[in-house]
Length: 534
Image (cartoon, rainbow, N blue to C red; front, side, top):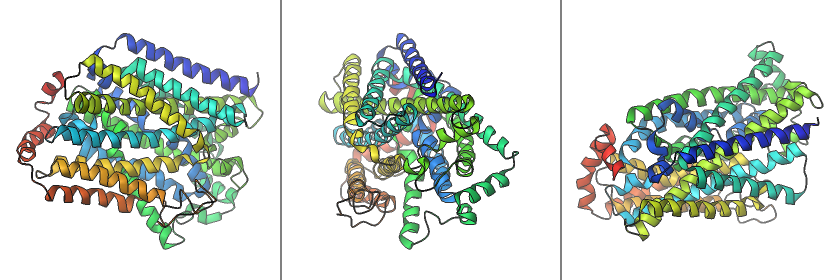
């Protein structure tokens, strides 16, 4: 049985499994609470698995191990950033948000502000963040399938992206939050199992001696001790050092503003379960990111990572699957083929689960915030709302497919870091100021969201990422004047600044009066259950 046949069979098995789960979940799904929040019926442990399933995206699994394989110590900084970010989400946002909202991020803002402007702003930023994030996952799916089935034709790559798009629309429209959550849980289990397996095999090759593994990695890459020290990617110039701080700000503050992570906290019945789920998620995600060390340095030690190698030409995205093949017995062996197929199928499951979560988030926001509140002014029935969410899933899926096909040359990790920067600049300031500042009001919230969103997107457009560098989107054009690849260091403070400016230039006594209610509800959970019933 050839490698291709084996891989294709495993791929189809993964897809069929997720489709079966979706059908099973849809039979137990009725009404808006089920569609948006899975009927709030998930335990802390189940939701913790699903949160980690949502968070460990293709960028973590394929991107970070690749960055470590190519840049050594500096690549590992991504792992640290993604992990530290959870502390902000746990301490400042998770429980408070769970207590004070219903289905979307905007619920928590709209509680004490004018509904329409705030919900429009929040829905806009939710959709923008989700689309950036979706692009990264779809591009990853295209790259993965090309590697496995050895297809070079552009039309087949495009077909893969369309297929992933159609699958994600199916998960969301048929399964809602219940189906999507079960897909996340299954995928988290698969991903952890696959990662543990490869990690153990890599360590076994070096007699479970970490310093031997690191020594072999430094020697094999030809970079010697420099590979294990800071400064290969960031640190040569002042600009690259500032760029690193900017990236760190975006990664650490972005998680607490990612809409598809935030709405996960609504799927649990109590605030205690919200805390439990974050603790489980931190345990799983923490151990996963520690294992990326073995995957990344293992790839550096056992694979060719030179400038012309498959690892380097894929931007590092193929390091994990190729490492699986190497530890399984090498290219052409049955063990190698089985492991390569297994890890790639897991990566594919990862992509499917994450795109489903993202599409659900944007569709919920369009239906619940824009349609039900802004257009229908609260007079929409639950059935109408869920119907609009399903239609929105088609629309968002179509946009993502259309944008992902031309974006195939882009690096996955960059696209995700961009989504984090937008989330940290647009969403986090308004969420934090709303929870902790009594005076904060409608103008402050809308200015914070639009100010952070626009400044972030504009700075990216004029950065070396889009034009004026060898790795840019448009290599032969140059309108770049902003020196940093990640705008976080400027756009995040701007988001907070606009929030402050909007607030101090207007008064809104109603928002201040309702602050005490919001505070009691956010910190104690009192009244949150009642809000769910309406």
